[in-house]
Image 1 (cartoon, helix red, strand yellow):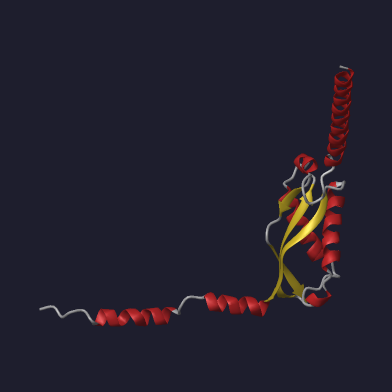
Image 2 (cartoon, one colour; image 1 turned 120 degrees about the vertical axis):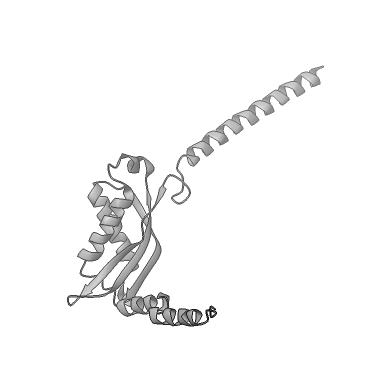
Amino acid sequence: MIKLALTAVWICAVTLGAVYFAIQTSSTNEAEAAVPPPFFGGLDYVRGEVISVPVVRDGAVQGYFLARLVFTAEPEKLSKLSIEPQTLITDELYTHLMGNPNIDFTAMETFDLTLFREGVRDALNARVGEKIFHEIIIEQVDYLTKEEIRSNAQRRRPAAPAAAAAATEPAAAEEPAAH
C-alpha cells in the first residue's frame, strides 16, 4: 500500500514538472517569435514602376537609363502616407538620377550600385521625415544608347508601303476578262 502511494506521488511530481517545463518553453518561444527576421515578415514590398530617364550630355540625349526597383517598408507607416508610395518612389528616383552629377550612365563600370541604393533610400526617408524604407532591391537596371534604340526600332518597323503596294498590283492585273 505504501509503495502504491509513493508511486502515485512520484507520478504527480513528474507530471507537474513536465507541465511547468512545457509552459516555460512555450513562453520563451513566443517572446522569440515576436521579432520577425527582416526578409520573412514585418515589411511590405513596394514595387516601383519602370522608369526611363534620358541621359543628356552636351545638350543632346545620349541614351536612356531604365530601372525598376522594389522597396521594403513598414506597412503601418506606409498606410499613413498621404501620397501613394509608388508615386513618391518614382519622383525621388527621377530627382536622384537627374540631379546627381556624380552618376555617369555612359560609363556603367564606374556606376556604384550600393551607393545608388543607399542614396535613393536615404533621400526617400529624409523626404518623409522618418525611416520608412529599409531596403532597395534592384529588379531591372539598363542603359540604352540612342543608337541601340534606333536599331531596335528599325528592326520592328513593318515593311515599306511601296513593297505593300507592289504586292497588291499583280492581284488587280489578274482579274478575269469580262465579256
